[in-house]
Length: 271
Image (cartoon, rainbow, N blue to C red; front, top):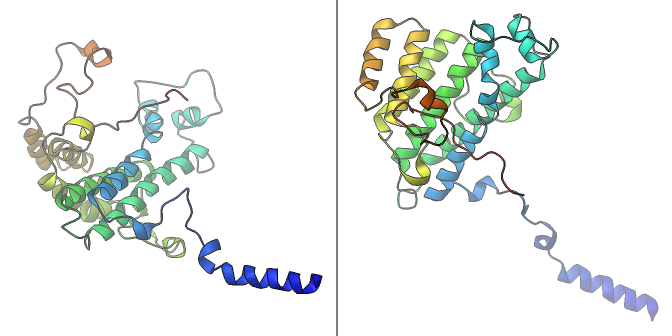
């Protein structure tokens, strides 16, 4: 009787337990298959691209300012700042790996969003024409920073598997400028809004796209185009603050007349 009862118990378990009982969706992550359906999905996906830049721009001065004449590393001599200051920083420095990873995480997220939005239902995603220019701006910004830091880098514009990503070679810097950064920014400035309000403040605007494109033209020494593009920026309402020290007066509105684009986030908070 004991053996028979055990057999019946096992039989009931096998009948009562279907594959769905153990084959569950993760509760801590969201599957891509159920994303990219609504406007909110795309807003959330775009917000995730900014996340990659929070730490990045905290250390960006190491690649520029610290190598110039406006700042230097004086005391500690065995960190990224000192190596950059001496022009001897190598790929072994953790900062280099973090920087590379931050930008390519942004690029991967943008490429996935752009690939999904083409087939998005217009009835569900009513702001498609706003999301695409924002994504183009972010991708152009990422590549502009990448090539100024690393030189030739892989040019990736579509979602790739990890295996295929390893097969993408480094692209010449000039081709990345001419075939990705500049086209992305030209397309972005045609679709971005002039201003945003509420929680959307901080998203790239027409002025941000034009300003970044003007900086790109300056970097590649195309001075006539740089002058023309930056002249357009001066017609959009930007102006210098009356006093330089106002830039550091945090009791004032940070979105002042000099503000063009930044990465908005709240650091810390009560736990």
